[in-house]
Image (cartoon, rainbow, N blue to C red):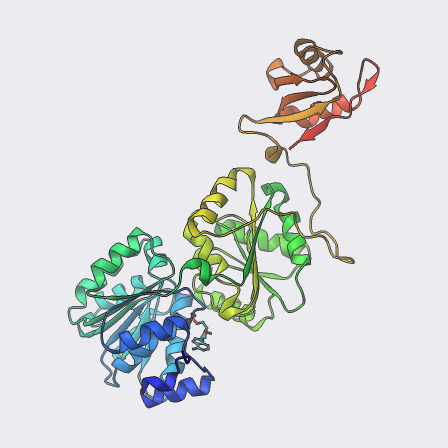
Length: 470
Ligand code: AMP
């Protein structure tokens, strides 16, 4: 079969010229599936992640459907301002000289200025739900005139609790003729939303997720919070000059703390989270996009829709709370078929969550050692004994002592340790004595101290050299 070509579609001249200028040769898979359906005015439910070319997949039908009228005919809703800006930019490029006025509508910007722009009349709006509602309530957007509606990254929108807002908007788009819904994943809520917002939609679930993330090597390092900085140092040290890294943490506070710690280590990084003023966020994103910042630390929300082709490394400093966020996060790398690496730092209490992620998406995420430190590079942090990681669910750390059952009984060994280290009896847990060695559980709070004491003691004239069993 010959590959599909844009020229087969007989697109609006302005659009086909713009595509020519962009140098795009053939439609991506999702474009190939969604554009012909969308152009017929049929509802589309499409599965595609960022990087698949999904913006043009819904963008081309929307741009063709809208005319230069200065009346709002199209609305694209995105989960974040960053994504809205990107989508609007891409639509602006794709329309070429068609002359549609495309406006972004998102929070954090000057209301008055935005209102004025809207008053001048726009053909197509790309926005986030909150501000779109706000502007409609103020009478600056006429939702009733909108004929074509697109919900981009529907899974993320619903994840962020936008369902009531979307519903509010949809109910007021009384002239809506066509709906395009795009999502990377299809949990039940997205299926429900598709059912609610579209009718007789053609589903273009073009590829499953396993096929969608082929170029990314995924690894996990089993490491507790105490040593995550050390592990990060190792991954950073393994990067080459042209690589760029996106680090995810789960809280805004952690974004700031980690970025500051990196700075203190002489590693230049930028922090991005939702609390920052919009212009600052745009500045930071810009420097990352241009490559002048190599490392960006961000929360999921802030990095949503982030479209930087240079990202080669994604680090989950914290594993995300939501299984789906993992796929969104790693999707920031390996874009348009480039290769990428995703590293997840998982403490022993996160191993279950990691299993859930790999099982849900059918992905292999092997637990590996941190990368070796390349010659000439120095560690970012010292590797410390992490007692919390070494202890079990009952808070016990197991040590091995070279004392066999000829030399001691459980009782006498326990009593001896309690006496020597002067710790309460409850600090000693189970003891197992074999032929020539014993395993002794010690409470994590006392473990370091007891081990130090035992190192300096002799039992029956024998040095003990306690060994921690992981
Ligand atoms: P998206 O998934 O919409 O974020 O697109 C990912 C990137 O691929 C963007 O930088 C697009 O400009 C680019 N792109 C989209 N469609 C094509 C295509 N058919 N050929 C080459 N690049 C494309």
